[in-house]
Length: 109
Image 1 (cartoon, rainbow, N blue to C red):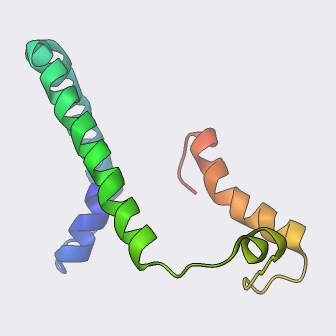
Image 2: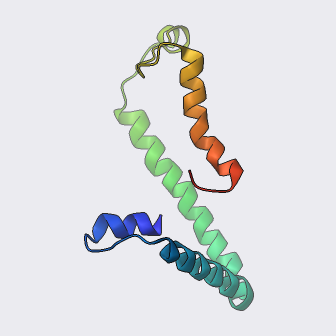
């Protein structure tokens, strides 16, 4: 994600695989330092992150419920619409599933 942001905002950045290795080591070092040296403040950081997650949940949920179009229950639970372009719905489901399966094999596609 860090490299994606770099390539998005810096047009002169050229992606190299060793950059991701160094970024991975930097993230590991940050986690190591936070869990060893910063262990005393870790509960406070976790509390702040919990509050941010709860506030973020409501910050997204409230506008979605307020501004989103409302439908009746019969339309929501009885109608199925698929606009993906695949002829077979099972094949469409399996293609969508393949993206989340990459997290289980431990490497990038």
